[in-house]
Every structure is written in structure tokens, then in C-alpha cells.
Length: 78
Image (tube, rainbow, N blue to C red; front, side, top):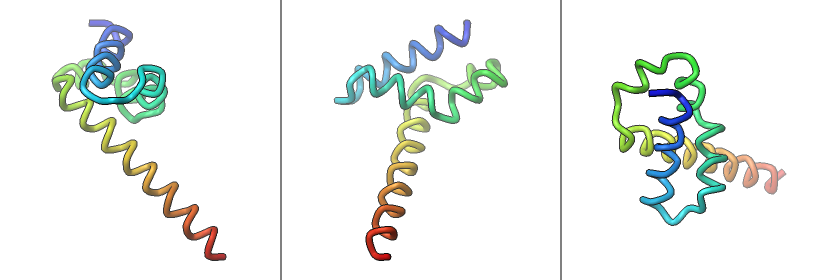
């Protein structure tokens, strides 16, 4: 399966399983470690189901958002 097809399947899976808009899901997936891993080792990525990658991508996004919120809070206290 090509990288593009697997990424599109993941985008569709997340879009269908969450209330997120497809355009936001595309942005999230394209900036995730999943996208980098898919470029580097398609075989490794292909050994895990879409559900696994969806969870990884969304957890990574939540962590990044929390870090951004923490930074904003710290800056506002300065």
C-alpha cells in the first residue's frame, strides 16, 4: 500500500470517528510523527492498524496543545 493511500485512510478514519473537520485532521496528520515515520519506514507503519495510529496521532496532538497552553500560561504570569 502506498504512503499516500495509508495516510488518506487514516485521515478518513479520524474524520469519521471524531467531530473534527477533515481539513483540521489533514493538518494534524501532516504535522504528526506518523507522517515522518510513514516516509521513513512504510513497512513498520503498516504493521499497526489505523485505530492504533489514530490514537497515537490524537494523543500527540493533545500533548502538543497542552504544551502550548502551558507556555501561554507561563508567559501570562511573567
